[in-house]
Amino acid sequence: MRRLLHRISVTVFAITLILIFYTVFSNGLNSMEYQFGQPTQSYTKTGFVHAEAGEIVAPGGEPFRVKGFNLPDWLQVEDWLLAGYGSQLGGVGHEPSIRTFLDTNVEEGYGDFFYQKLRDNFYTREDIFTLAKMGANTFRVPVAYWMFDERHKGLQYLDRLVAWAKEYDTYIMLDVQTVPGCQNSASYCDPTLSVNEAPFFHDKEYRDKTLELWIMLAKYYAHEPTIFGYNIMNEPNNYPHTPERDSVLLNFYRDVILAIRSVDKNHLIILDGDNWATKLDVFASDEIKLEDVDDNLAYTIHNYSASSCGVIDGLFPTFTKKRAKRILVAEFNDILRDLPTKQVPVIVGEYGANCLPKQLAYHEAFMEKGLKHTLYYSPIGTDRRQGGMILFHFGGDAWRTYVSTLSKGVKPSDAEMLDAFSSLRTKQLYINDEKRLVDFEKFYK
Image (cartoon, rainbow, N blue to C red; front, side, top):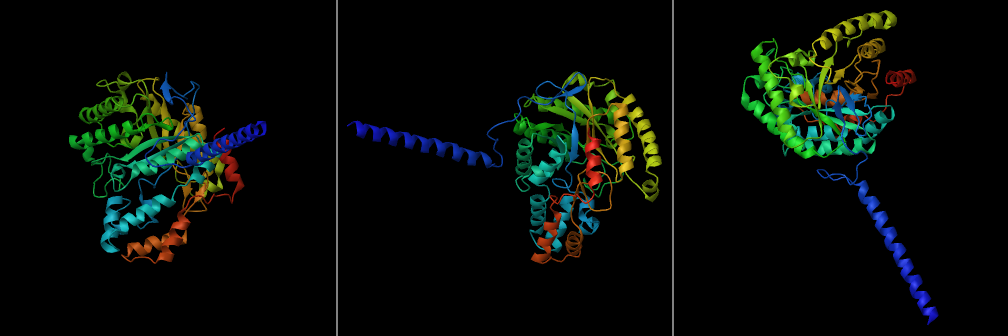
């Protein structure tokens, strides 16, 4: 009898161990899978990044310094990704026009095929890992408003990116790059617009649609701490200044703040200055003080004054850096002079230069003026000869040949298409110049 009881107890113990092992192992496998549109099973952060007394603060209350990259030409395609053939594809970087061209001239449905392949192959989990390892903690993601319909499935792509960012303890800044009606006359917004023509500012229907979009996004991500904040509208251009024009922008910003706060009281709201985000003087208006509307705000500027580099810049790097820094400091003095309060932090949401001396000039000018929150324009480049912080290389001859074939209204072969999209993947780390990586690491110390 005693022997029988012993066998039973051993059997029960063994079955228990098997059940425990199976439960832990299967849960581990399930936790590795990420379903679009579903919250992940655990958070590495508690609370949310927020603004406090003019500073950006981490969830734990300690100061947080924004440093990282934009991830452009993924959920909002611009012309330079198209290897110079954008105008021949029906629109200079304007996605709807290019889609129509491909459907009409290449093959019905090829537009959807093209953009799906692009979005599936451009940014990868390896990219986020590599950039996070090098010190980036925030990624600003430009997204066009049309990505949030059933056809384009923008939320699915964003959810995938949020999962990657969460895995590597980084943040995603959601930027609506193009709003209904267009907030500026850039070609990616609408290539038919004339200079300074922005229907968004003249038709309330477009502004109401943008409010509806942000209510949807804020409700969807309200409890997602990996979202750094909401960048409401990229580079509005309502110039030249008049009280009436300023009033439209300020009233819209007030309305969108209140709309978001009706569904999300957690996230930082980030507002671009006017004149392509190069000025902050609109926030100094006496009509509406946005800092009185909400205390979890940040303002953002963009700067490309020192972006281009020529042969002389490369030959005389010390002179180039000093001259560029002098220009940048003077510009930042003018911009910051317009700030109505020190209680709202300022983020440099975009900047960039294609040579190292001017990038170092940016760094020194930022430090001198206290602009410690900076996001480089892009980690990618099309030319291996470019300098500075171009970390990934994509495209090359295969991509240019593919886009050129499309521009002629010809459907590329399957082999040509596969070669092109294989070359597009940015996980090919640009490491042929070790000095460049060292300089990048120094830049963010």
